[in-house]
Each structure stands twice: as C-alpha cells, then as structure tokens.
Image (cartoon, rainbow, N blue to C red; front, side, top):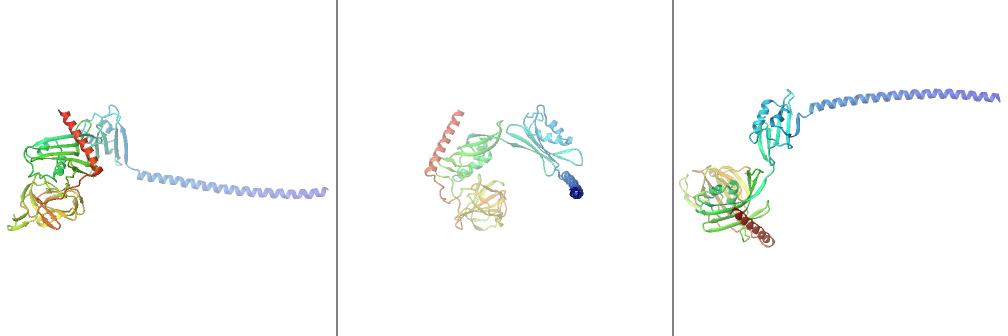
Length: 432
C-alpha cells in the first residue's frame, strides 16, 4: 500500500515539474510577443506622428493667402474704420474710400447690412491687400470695389433690385422721330425698338411729315429712389403718319413675340422697307453713272446716305453667310433669309460685335454701322435685295404679309389688347 503511494507521488512530482517548465516557456513566449507588439505600436505611432508632421508641412505650403470675411455693419461704423481693421496700407485705404465716395458718403453706412470682403495676406510684409470690398448703399444698389488683373483698384455700382412701371409717352413730330422721342424723355434703345417695329410699315425718311404723332406704352425700371435705370418691353405703339393711323400691340411671351394690328394681323413681313433710320435715298436702283468709275453701270442696290456710325439693321431674320471685306463694297454683310430672299449691306465702317458667318440674325438686329469703305465717295449704305438669285429694286418690292392670329390665339390677343387699351385710358385719366 505504501509502495503504491510512493510511485504515484513520484509521478505527480514529475508532472508538476513539467507543468512549471511549460508555464515558464509560455510566459516567456507571451512576454516576447508583447514586446514585439509594443515595438510595432511604438513604430506605428512614430509613423503616424511623421505623417501628421508631413501633412501640416504641406498644408502650410498650400494654404490659401485669401481670406473671406462677412462683416456686419455696426452703428457708428465708417468705411475707413472697417478698412483699418484689415491691416491694409494707408494709401490703399484712401484709394478704396476715393472709389466709394463716387457713389455714397463714407460715414453713411446701413447698420445690419453685410459687407462681402476678400483680402490677400502678403508674405513679404505684414500688410494685406484688398481683393474685393462689396458694400450695399441702398436697398437696391451695391458698390463693388475690386482689384483687377493689373493690380488697379476699380469700382462699379450694381443694381440688386429694380421697380417696374409702365409709362405712356407721346409727342408731335416737328423735325424727326428721334428728336421728338428724346424730347418725350424716351431712352434711345426704346426709340430704336420702336423704329424697328414700324420699319415694316413706314419709311422714316420719306413717309414722316411735320406734325405727325406717336404714342408708346412701355416698361421702365427705377431704383427705390426713383432714379431711372433702363427701359423694357414696348406693349403698344401708335403712329399717325401722313394721314394714316397705325396701331400695334405686342402679343406673345418674352422669348417669342410679335406686333399685331387690331385685326390680329402681324406687322412683320419677310423684309423691312428700310434697314436704316433717318437716312436719305442718295442713289436708286438701276442704271447710273458710277461716281468713281465715271461710266454708266447698273446699280444693283439702293444707296442710303447717313452719318458715319449710324446703326444698320438686318431687314429680315436669317443666317449670316458672310461678314468680311468685299472688294469695292468694302466691309459688307450678306444674309440669307430663306430659300427666296437674301440681302447685302456694303461700305460699312465696322461690324456689330460677334458678326460672323453662320450667326443667326433676328429681324431688326444691329449688324453694323454706316461707313465709307471700299469704292465710296462718302458715308452711306449700299442695300441690295436678291430674289431667287437676282437683284431687285427693294423700294418696289411687294412682300408677303405676316402671320394672322386665329382661333384660341386670336381670343387671347383680344383679351390682351383690351387690357392694354384700358390701361392706357387709366394713365391718360390720371394725368388730367
């Protein structure tokens, strides 16, 4: 019994020794692995710190020198006071104030309004440079001061809100439509559009008589102080010319519209009677003695004498097929209107901006300006109409009538026409 117990105890002793040795080996392995992990973590930490340092380095290198500031105007602020807080040179501050004073008082700012400011930090010194200083001076206008590409400080007034009003203008023609319209305080752009509308029906050089009369209803735009900014669309145009009364109404939307007689017939034809206003017919179509060549030669167009620089209109819609030097014709534009009609405009001083072959042209659009280029003895426009490939007399040409409104379109036109007539009557009554 005792012997068995001894053998068993001996075996237990060896097992315990083995267990201790195994435990020590395991602990050593775990410790070594833990040290390896700590080493890796330490190495990773160093790498992460290095990455952060590199990132910060590059951010410092590529950080934009421009700062955007939204400054809210406070009571007692002035332009000078605000600019001094931007670390600008005093000479630059004075430049900005000088530009601002063109539009408003330096000390009259609107508390609560926001100034949009952009400044550039200069690395070489502590002074900043202004890039943009945009400040509202009224509810509808903002003064914007910028530094241009050449480094100069420039300013402009920007209209942010406009107020629209319909105006009825009228006058008796004593000398010319243009002068009479200016007397009635009508903007030149509206006069040009008015002339374009009636250009299908009236030759302003030969049809107008003294004491003829016109009336226009059109949009005007003002700022909140009542200062005129610009004119808008013409809704109604009337002329009493040489015993004839012609009344036209606008119908359509802002993108597509035309002018119609009271019977719903469009005033627009394939071509206008004359592509230039206020010009004198200086040389008709047909045989004539050429003023430069000195011998009799057929004149394929009609010449209109006018001051140099007078605008020339496209007599019809279409595509420009040439805008270039045409030899004896000097600077000229050729327009193809459709499969039947083309027109030529020669001796131009220069072309309108963007005039080139392939450009789509709207009837009445300015295409160039009267000059005396090529074989010419003085400023005039040579105007030529080509019908089915043959030059014809533009002054005797009978053109097809325009569109006639029918059905639902005619009903809508009648409603708009009546509204316009009522509005005109109200404006006239208010003046009395």
